[in-house]
Each structure stands twice: as C-alpha cells, then as structure tokens.
Image 1 (cartoon, one colour):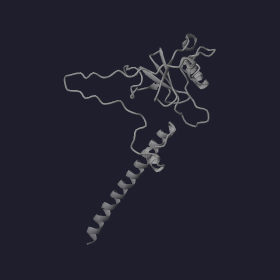
Image 2 (spheres, rainbow, N blue to C red; image 1 turned 90 degrees about the horizontal axis):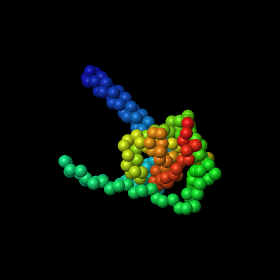
Image 3 (tube, rainbow, N blue to C red; image 1 turned 180 degrees about the vertical axis):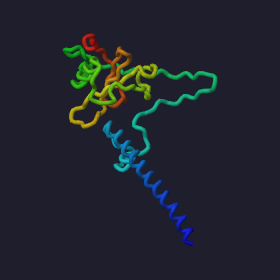
Image 4 (tube, one colour; image 1 turned 90 degrees about the vertical axis):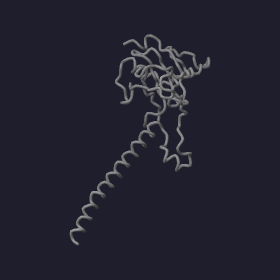
Length: 192
C-alpha cells in the first residue's frame, strides 16, 4: 500500500506545477491584452463586457471576405478612396501644412523628416493596412508614427501613416485607423 500512495502523490506534484504554469501564462496573456487595449484607450473585451458593452464584437468593421477558387483569380474590390476634405480643413497653415493637423503632428513630421529619434518604439514600424482603407500597396510601403495626445499617458489614437521610402504620401488619422485624411508636406519638411 505505501508504494501506491507514493505513486499518486508523485503524479499530484507535476499536475499542480502544470496548473500553476497555465495560470501564470494565462495571467501574462491577459496582462498583454490589457496593455494592448490600454495603448489605444479602450477596454479589453472582458472588461467591456463587465461594463455592459457588447462582448465579442470587433471595434473595426472588416472588409468582406471574397471567395476564391483554385486556379482562378477573384476580383477584389478597390478600397474606397480617402474622403475628400472640406475646403475649411484643407486651408494651409503658415508652414504649408493643412489646418486639420494638430500642433503635435508638426513635431511628428519634423521627426520623420530627420529620421528620428522617435519617442515610441512602434514609430516607424510597418503599417499593414489590414482594414484596406488606404490604397493597396506591397507590404512595407506604409509606415506609422504616433501623434501624441496631450493629457494621455499612452499612445492614444492619433497617427501619421506615410507611404514610400522616403515618404511620398502622408495620411492622418485621429480615430485609430478608422478614417484617414491625405495631405501634402511642403518640400522643406521632407529634406534632410
């Protein structure tokens, strides 16, 4: 009998260790998800559900999935062009940039022109255009940069997305990639 009880207790320790490790990994994963959602100023799905918000819904609408057959190409619809800006929002400021850009965007554009250093480690990373709101280009064409929001202790939702290396296209979003406004940067801004 003592032999059998030793065997059972031997199996309990590894099971306990595995359970503790799984709980640690789950806790780490939850913290990562929460940090990612905090970076854009929204609650993770579990927290949103607790607050009474609908759970399981994506914040951004995704484009429809096109069915494809092997050996044939499916025609994918062109992404919608960025909305035209109103005449008041296209008025240029004294430095030639559009009036809809906040002052913090001017600092970001200066950093882009100089090549950094950038205040956020994600700045300059590839923007995947997964939502398809910008014209379709090869991976790596678009880069994203943070436009700081006063009073926030995280990146917020404002970004400048550039196209090309060196940049030849500029887009501004203040709603975390939901909508974009294209703008031009005067030549002195992009020279090094």
